[in-house]
Amino acid sequence: MIAYKTTGIVDMELVSLPQDWEKQTRFFPVIECIEKIPCNPCSFSCPKGAISVIGDITNIPQIDFERCNGCSICVGKCPGLAIFLVNPNFSENKGAVILPYEFRPLPEKGSIVRLYDREGKEIGEGMIEAIRTSKAFENTPLVTVSMEKDLVMCARHIRFD
Amino acid sequence: MSEEYNIVIVGAGPAGLAAATTASKYTNKILIVDENIKPGGQLSKQTHKFFGSKNHYASVRGVNICNILLDGLSKEKVCFRPETSAIGFYKPDTLIIQDKEGLHKIKGNKFIFATGAIENMVSFENNDLPGVYGAGAMQTLMNLYGVKPAEKVLMLGAGNIGLIVSYQLMQAGVEIMGVVEASPFIGGYHVHAAKLRRMGVPILTSHTVKGVYGDGKVEKAIIHKLGGGFEPLHGTEKTIEIDTLCLAVGLTPSVELLHQAGCNIKFIKELSGYVSVHDDMMETNIPGVFVAGDASGVEEASAAMLEGNMAGLKAAYDIEGFNRSVFLNEKEIVEFELKSLRTGPFCERAQAGKKRLMVEER
Amino acid sequence: MRLKDHPVLDFKFEEKKKVSFIFNGETLYGYEGEPIAAALHDNGVRVLRRSPKLNRDRGIFCAIGKCSSCLMNVNGIPNIKTCVEPLKEGDIVKYQDKKGNIRGD
Picture 1 (cartoon, rainbow over the protein chains, first blue to last red):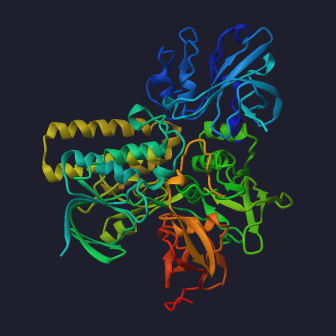
Picture 2: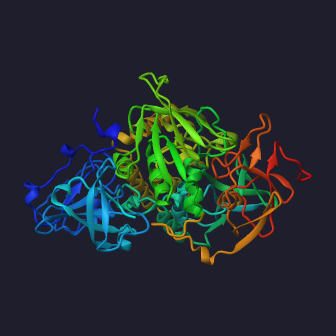
């Protein structure tokens, strides 16, 4: 049996990443959606046609990293909040993650937040680089957090005081 | 003197509202009755974005879908009576309703029962203690009336409802002490479980609640591990301090009115209980009496809306006899959308149940 | 406590009418038109009645008018499903003992 059915934590071997992802210098999506559920907004909302759900809508989304321009619409549209944008080389010594954050209060730009991994374990600190909300995303705020480069594939939630 | 309508819909949830939406495109004099203060049923309490495709309102929050449906209903064609209970149906055309003024006789040409479902209870010590709430009750308090419903909650059930409501409780500032699930596996979507896990919520599979305890109200829960045969494993008890135990252990279709009306009722395990036999357009064995939504078998709200569309379409067609190709075309669209929604492993159960229902009908 | 800063919902409490009602002789406040049980819950009242056979306290369970766990005496009338009964100014709400009493006590 697949581990995530008991743990609730995605098996990263099932998630597709661009080749040499650590060398990427722009945001690319990490789609942590690995189950056959009836859902395809990531595909129909992508303006570049980079994400496709072929055939039945229960099929798992396929991504063409070449076509993606990192616009983050899929992050705001995904009903499962399962898409994250990752930039491993956001600056010379920092990486960054764009994640959906549906809680109040919202963090302030420039503030320091604690980072949590997929198990809710605290893994370090990050800085809020940007916050965006849009009616098109049904008001799901998208938060850009910068952090140590080796945390970008782990950090999936933030908290602050 | 009794009032007369073309179509009478019982229940203003997703199925009932969708039935009215489709029916009102083709006919008028539609009545919806609902026991609650506000229309929308469970749909108005869903703050998460829906799954599905564009035609299933994917990526739109349930509460906003509810508003889209309500705004789309023409006041000239559809009359809504809140705080009104439907208490009896008399063949062939009479429904008895009760409101503040008393009992009323309603005459209808077609009837659509979209009566929904009721939350299940499970047995454990002190399961009647104040502080043991259905997951839907928590949603009603916090998402409809803005009341913070609890401080520390333990959720029983890791199906989609248990996972989604836990997340919604956290959005309302409530602490989730854990999600307990008797089965060895998380029943709901992985993406819902992942949202809780990254916020530090433990999901304990192969565990259940032994009991809740406290002086007149829930103060703590004792949970324990279960073995392969779901037997409690002694010595694994753990105490968790909470003020609320939330139950998300499934729903049972509300078929009382359909049963009383004389519909053919069958027990179909995969559809969560006794359901009314119906054909592919949601008509029961009693001509002119339709069923839609959870009352015809517990599924997701998106499926309930499509079943409502189907029932509303057929009821309106039987009354007005409009252009047959328009009718067939719309029927085909709804059938396609229902089929696409019901593909995949998560819908196997409901699919098998619906198949059994149709086979047993023949 | 009311949810005044929610990430998805805006309850617009400032547009709602606050009303007073009496619960077991004590004056409490809620918003007009919301279910009596919701207003009580906001005031920390979770025990609504006592069960007929085993004398056990009961609170809300379903909150949609289906389970009868929230039956109370409202303005002298027993067995009112307070989860679907809109609150009005001056309502007199009482804890219900067992099957209730038409005299209102």
